[in-house]
Length: 163
Image 1: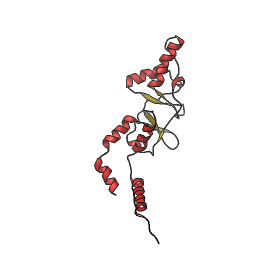
Image 2: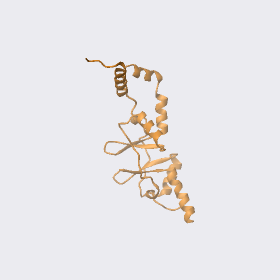
Image 3: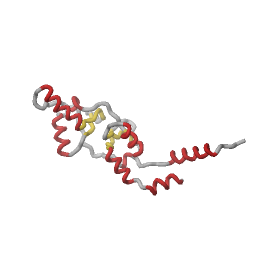
Image 4: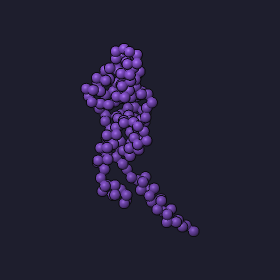
């Protein structure tokens, strides 16, 4: 006998719908014109660039243009604490002393739902977007994913579910 219970058939249909649904790629919303820093750059220069260009963080690349860290406003605040703690003027420290090296990235193959899920599971405000070789191709932020939410339409969602 070749009988499948109704709930098994419905589950198979739902699985088929979910795997066939395509969401917009994260690359559609990511920023590609990024300020980047070298680990040997002066940290005070990073602060100046962040203030001048109203950015809250940037990737740190080595001489081979490989992603090795991120520098954020929070990382730069350590500069003030170091200065007060050691009782000396703001230092001429290097980016490498302050940057975050514990990196979480997102693949160019990810979609906006993957990115939203990743943001919900972490406290990060941005993720570097990397290709299969790990090369930096852009950066996606929470705000970028908010733009994706705005672009989603209920009719599109319903159309996908009825296929």
